[in-house]
Length: 371
Ligand code: ASP
Image (tube, rainbow, N blue to C red):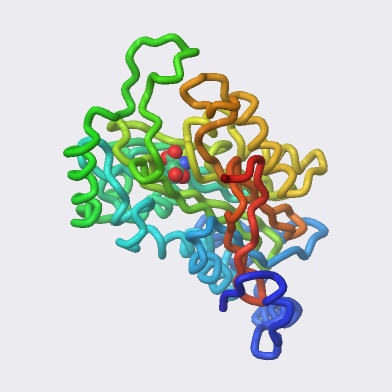
């Protein structure tokens, strides 16, 4: 079940909910250990519980991941590795035709083709996988996990990524829903002089570029990180990326260190929002490194927001006070199970969290308050 706040959560009777202790006990009784973790078997390797730690279980996601975190917790509760939990969680959004920012139903590129990006990282092995600009595959997060598990590579793109997916039994499907097609046609009809191409220009010129308003330029992505019953951490990010992008454009979501990063001893981080800004600052890696230096997850996310603000130097990307005129959001958890998130522009932003007591929305910290 979902609580709207911590207060509500705390005031709810927990009698009908599984407590964290019962949760862990149930796992112990069921004989859940490293040797029976499903993905450990799938990989032919054994991941021992993370050292000196019984944190979690916990799952975090972007605000559009309310069902995602609950699903991830359900999978964790069955004894699975966090990597399988986060993938199962984001699959719900990838296959949802009503989420126009991820997977099936995602808004297409400027030619009307849905191109998807995803990456995943597995804490116990520090291995990563990703796919960029993949077409026709509804679950790019599953393909990213396959790249990690069944190739010696980290990132496959375009046709090669699709071929790798079909080789492993994925079907190529038409991912453009009528709703997404109609929105794309409307964009073509009304906004076709506003695209992502820039003429040669003076960097101090504010008027160059498109500066799409959020209504014109839909963004969105889903990230999910989790700690499993063994205290091991994984994270995944998946998206259809920026709507009406130049074909072949790859955002931050499939790039390890930008869209997602995990260090099993430290924590995990992931992002949504303007991918170009995150690509230039590799913020998921930065957040994990800040946590290594002692920052809380929330402070580390705020640090990354500030880094982007400091590095946003072009006039076309600034408001009249020199602040970024776009948003980026970060979500993080540390190895002790503490969660946090922050965005550049906020006030009412939230992120999804689930632990053994159920799900809730937590507020995102912010650098600047939205008017
Ligand atoms: N970060 C995604 C990208 O740039 C988009 C988003 O999250 O809105 O592709």
